[in-house]
Length: 310
Picture 1 (cartoon, rainbow, N blue to C red):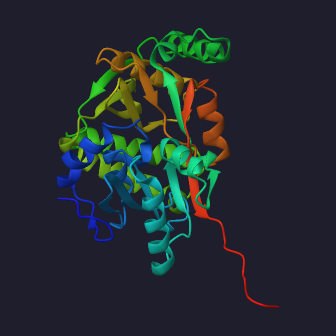
Picture 2: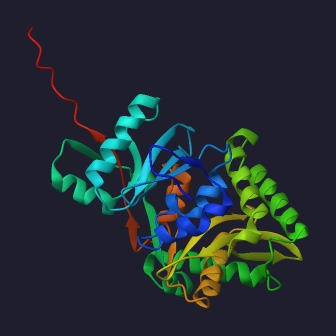
Picture 3: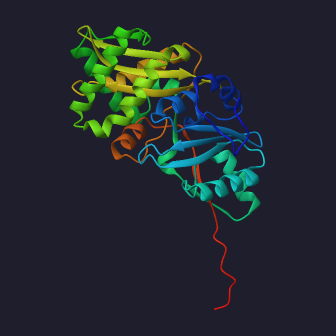
């Protein structure tokens, strides 16, 4: 059972049902998705608690690893934010709450209780229409459609199929493809370490989740994959995806074909997660002409002016 803040517990797979019950009450922000929390908890530092009915999470910054607090919920948000900021100050955590969903920020700002909110644009989740991902008929998406048609023409034997990532043989193919992607993109081991570990955690725990993995095979070799999770309210979460950089248009094809598979499972929207402020990732995600964003904010408190005598 998740304890009441300030007591907290380490994230464990057994926490999934309790966290999931809280998540279904709110829009599907990627940072609170249980699978995302689990996969990126590569150092075992994620901690959970409950405060005033809100889910409190201690997370690590995806880039710097700096520990910070956040919360999901709309109950007694001023009291919740105050308690978390006080705790962070006393325990040497990031002095601002990070990646706080917009739905919690709106009532907080309306109260005018001395809080300051700054949009965390690097953390905004990209929301895409499944139908648009399949049709690719918007003007902004036509270049992708042309690349896909050319790729299919040049490689008529290209095959799209569902993958069972619980199977060790399939998991090993995914890991080898990730290494080809790293080398092809010119990334160092250090630059790819966190994501590599997250993908390994994802695959190793796949039996505990309802992941849908889709692969692209060229000449019998795995050339690309996506790992996705159907969640509530018609959404699916796009957790991971990698394609061999040698094949131009393959990532576009695989994203579109993944959407087709997810539509068959009743999904109508995709959470493409955030871009982390990385220029290449931002260009790629924006190239899909997102329908909307799930916005997040950093929350701090106004400093109190000194009233002492000069």
